[in-house]
Amino acid sequence: MALSKKRKVDSENRAFNPEWTDSFMFILPTGNTKPVCLICSETVALIKSANVKRHYETKHKVFHQTYPLKSELRSQKISSLRAQYEQSTRILTHSFTAQQRANECSLRVTWILGQHKKPFTDGGVVKECMSAVAETLLEGKQKEELCDKIKQIPMSASSATKESEMLTQDVLAQLDEAIHKVPCVGLAVDESTDVSDNAQLLVYVRFFNQEKKEFCEDVLGVTPLKTSTRGEDIYLAIREMLTQRGIEPKQVVSITTDGAPAMIGREKGAVARMKEDNPELISYHCIIHQSVLCSTLSDEHAEVMNTMMKMINFLRASSSYQHRMLREFLREVDANADDLLLHNNVRWLSKGRVLERFWSIRREVAAFMEELRSQKATEFSLFLKDEKRMDNVAFLVDITSHLNELNLKLQGKDNTICELMTAVRSFQRKLEVFKEDLQGDCAHFPAVQDQVQGQRDVSSFGDFVERNKSRISVTSDGAKFFCCNPK
Image (cartoon, rainbow, N blue to C red; front, side):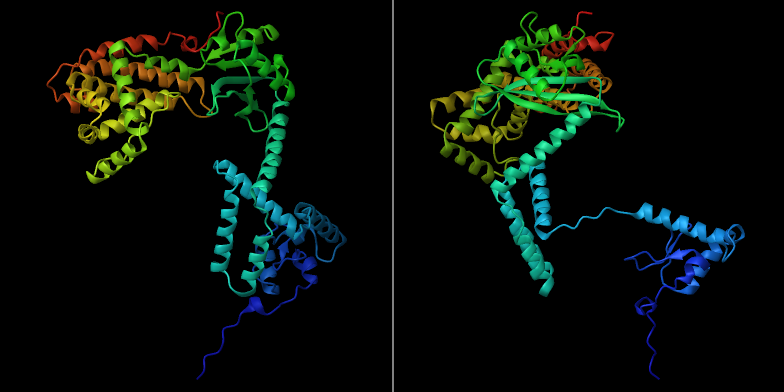
């Protein structure tokens, strides 16, 4: 006996009966495939009398007592509920053309490329990837239609440049709108030199967003200092930026800078000039720059550090052939890393990472140095064999690692002064532990422990720790640690 086919009621094209609206308070909105209850806005799975009746009698069984069937009161209630439903579900629709949708796709891709700091020329690669995915996933007419739509998306570098400018203007407009709604803002200012030797002034803004109920931080602007970088130049650049963004000097209640004389000079510094416009301005010292005071080395440690940087730059940058030979040698001996890191003199964190990488392959580097026949290589080879100097290198590897850990905790967005001061005070306590540890088994100094093997006294390194502990000592009211105000 043949098995009967199972009914598929959802494919039977059942029609909605208008009488169900009065009887069971259900409607079928335009473009919808499921009836909607006017009372609770829930839907039923199928357009069937039994379904809507079951819902009505189960969840709204007392409704007919207040609004009797076929009564004028019930009709008025139905009209009111229908109007409320239509009002709540009304959506302003806009018919986008195919080209408009293509432009939106291009804007979204440009936004993502900008977020990931990718060149605009990568837009063409993204377009190729999209086409390849469409051709692989789809077949027939769907594939042709999607591929045609992808071809319409403008993703050239010139298009991405224009779109990036549009997005930038929109972001700036949103930031300006948020700033104009607040009574006061705080600034953070830093001046640095880019790879083209041009001085750039970077200004951050921080304010409390009343709508979001949170503090917001963002880049207010970046402006070049075309000639000199005096305090007056920095002040004028900040004032011009504030004027362009519609921010009054009185609206700026605090400013954070580094310790450069051009920033905090008593008479001609940028902060002093800004206090002429707003005497109530509070100035702060960047807490990260304060902590970098730990990086001040003694003469002995400074000599070792400089020699290390010269040696690494000699291996990495003096000869491309020598650099290739070093990498090949490290691969052949299966070293922990296949290259040394090149030091960036702008950032202290760079030294810590450079030393850490060197220490992991120091024996292989020493072996490679002995194979070289130049005078410099001989000098550096003798340096690597000097136990006292290598003890200092090991100590620098460990202490810079601890300093880097502190500096990283002080970086990032949305940190409060409580969190920053906690990190600094915690590090101060660590320095006390480090000093005692250097007189014992050096548990917190693994490089030193590996280097000396308990055979040499390294308690003298405690003097360095004690000296830096005094430099970052926190007063009882912690805020004075970074505040430059005499009040």
